[in-house]
Length: 432
Image 1 (cartoon, one colour):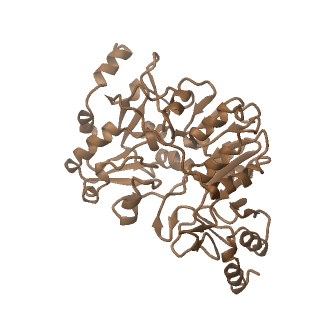
Image 2 (cartoon, helix red, strand yellow):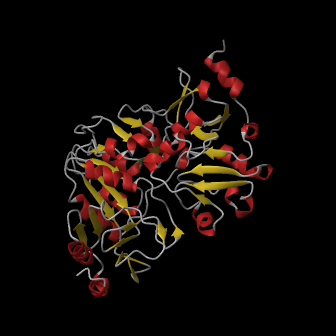
Image 3 (tube, rainbow, N blue to C red):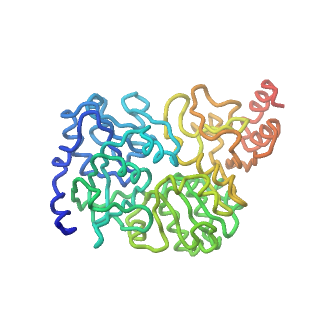
């Protein structure tokens, strides 16, 4: 019988060796963000013309690998679960696919065979003494994909933290191993300007000590975080752990003491930040990384009392419908976990969800509060789910309000230059 180390050595090889396990027509599942394995995906890009009709499914690609090129589409093409900077041009140009989803339900799509999972390429920590690797940077849907996949290839990197939670893969589940020592990609905090600061202050005023936070990525969510360093006994149950949350831990604002679900533990499903964040995660008993059908499930997340969710949108209409993922018909991002956590906060005892956005776009020439969503807009969070909407001009609480009251509240937080137009449109639509 082979020892764990003998199994490891037998499965170790080059990235190009690993490509021999990929077949035409396969769906390759890749974790979120910096959990993507660059050595494997660069090799796939170099050899893409040797394949036919291979897809790479991922919720947020960080690097624009060679297979993102339109000429690679017949060979290897990206299937976006969420668009970001690397994949957006392909989504808008039509050479990258798009799979609509709720982040919480991607594991379910895989488990039920609604989304294929033939091969998994993932970044992993070094193997533990028990033969386990941690998928700490992108636990998300990858654990479900591994359970279904024919082939599992891990890129083992000593800079990947080994974390607690449901994020461990045993050597016996692995088909092939590739080693790399490149530093993990670092993602800095977004730019925070005066508008973001103003919105951050307004949201922070509504967050009580003892709340549990879900914080999305972006300038406004991070502006909120910067206003919370004086709060006490905050907890974390989120999809993404980043440097903003690390700052709250270091400031003593986050200790998870008053959480009602997994007290004492921070919970997340992927990481996006600095080397300092990744080092903080390593063997940290305060942190658990879980799949997205645990972190994002509204029923589970909603078991946290005083759950606060903070997520950004691109446009909100006078009924409160949010277009958070497209500009007209052009895809920009995706649903991600926004709806999951809005619904979780609505279920939570004392919970609050905040949709945040600047009041204008294009240097103040376009209102983001609109009479109706622009034609073709992908509707994200429904009017029935939205709780608070916040711009730099104020806070509108919509739940339980009539259509007329909603319109009045949202016009009140629109930019003053657009309020007369919005009132006219509301009157024309018989909202007033």
